[in-house]
Length: 318
Ligand code: NAD
Image 1 (cartoon, rainbow, N blue to C red):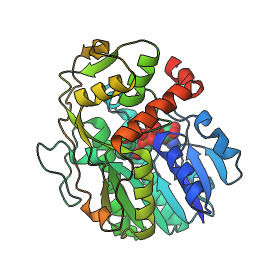
Image 2: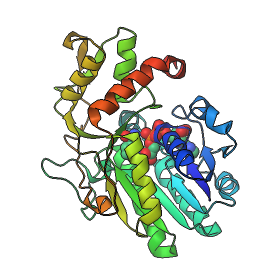
Image 3: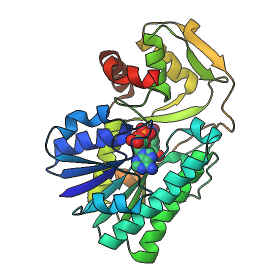
Image 4: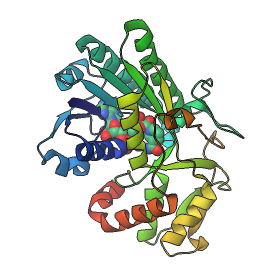
């Protein structure tokens, strides 16, 4: 099968392509605009392998999408602006890429008649929850420009299912960690700072809670939804590993062999959501469950950043 994967020069998309190449015979077309978050160095080895081709283009550009989608039966749509802090200082690009871009992707996919369109979303669209976990049927309550633009993109994708019969499925995943994540996100930021002997910035009291999932488990979840997900359905994907930011920080410090004196407290993020949590029973009914233990996954991730300075140092410098 020929598959179009958008945003695969970024963190999760590139991991998805690696996983897919290893577990299927698919040929993959990557469409990516190579923003600051997308880098050819992340996928260079994949392009050399013969089964992956690359189109440098913007998902808001109908012509670029039409060129890339030719002959593809399936679309997995990762491309997005993804960093909450950037959305607070520069929201326009989030609305453009995440909402307009998803609309163009859906409209072109409808026009050419793909067999399946998987829209990758986030648990952040539900907003914050003090106790319990959000189910797929719960109303959305996004609270940052990032999550609001992702919620908009979910609604756009699902509307194409209703209006045009586009074979859409949506996944909403919790925080991912693993290799090839841009060093602005918390785990790679902290590890790479500590490699350089620099302190790690912790928001406020560090009491905010996030659920962590290894990126390979996310990729496996997307694979299950691609194969068996119901059209027009939404599937939560989560790790069941809830940690306060302070606990996560302590685990990273421990893994790097340094103490809490390396923490630098910084002013809290504006409108910082307290806790995200998703109920994953619906996806588990399809046979998925996370396989990577958090302690093992974190240790492997720290090891990866230590071993792959050639990849992250130029990005950190930028
Ligand atoms: P990322 O920022 O690492 O990568 C985004 C990729 O999209 C980059 O390669 C970038 O160049 C590309 N891109 C951005 N704008 C584009 C445009 N206009 N046209 C074409 N390409 C463009 O993001 P990520 O962390 O890999 O996230 C991928 C997807 O997964 C996003 O949709 C995000 O909302 C979602 N998600 C992420 C997480 C997480 O923890 N990182 C969790 C749940 C869901």
